[in-house]
Length: 270
Image (cartoon, rainbow, N blue to C red; front, top):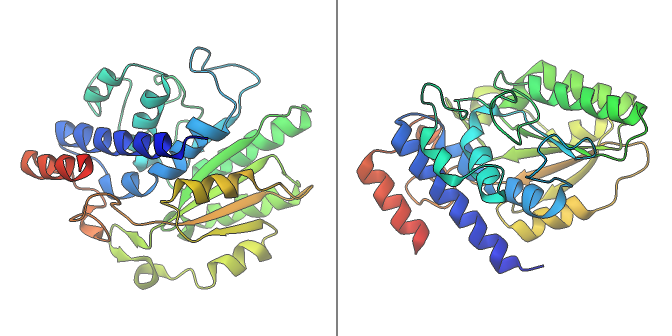
C-alpha cells in the first residue's frame, strides 16, 4: 500500500472541497474537511466498488448519514473516477447532479439520498439487513457525525443493528467535537459516548487520530466479531488542513470567500 499516494489523494480532495465551496458560495467546509481520510480510506482502499459500474449488484454500499458533508463525498467520488472532476464546479447549481445533499438518482456512486440527520444510519441498517437476508457478501458502511448522534433515530438504528446481528455493517463516527452552535458537550452532551456504543451492542474501535489514514485503514481491516456490527470512532479535527478553519465552529456552514479560498489552497499545496 502506498500511504504517500493516499495522503496526496487526501490533499487533492481537500483542495477540491475548498474550490467547489468557494465557487458555490455556500456549503459546509468544517465537517467535510474532517471526514476526508475516512472517505479516502473507504473509496481508495477498502470498498468493493467499480466506478465503471456504479450500480454493480455485488458492490459494497456507503451511506453518508451526515449528508451536509456532501462536498467531501463528491470530491472523493470524482477522485475515484465516478465522474469527471470538472463536474465539481456545478456544486449546488440548478440542474447539477451535485446538490447540497447527495441524491442517488442524480449522482453516480451515491447509494442513498441523505441530508436529514439521523436518517442515513437507519437506511444503512436497512440495507445491511436486506443484504444479509439475501445471503450476500456485500458490506455496508455509513458515516455519522457526533452532533448528529444527538438525534434519537441514531440510537434506534444502532439498537436494531445489534438486534439483527448485522456483522456486515460498519458505522464510522466523525468525532470532531463541534457542531453549528458550538461545542457538542455544551449544546447537548453525549456523555460516555464509547460506553453507550458498547452498551448498545456494537464492537467499538477507538481511532485516536481519524485524520491519519493509516489508523483509519487499520480499524477498517480489523475483523468483524461474528454477529456484531462494528463501530469505528474517529477523533478528527473540524476544518482539518486549513489552519484558520481548524477547530472553529464558525466554519461549520460558511463558504470561504475568494481570498480565503486562495489562502486555504496555498496552505494545502504547501
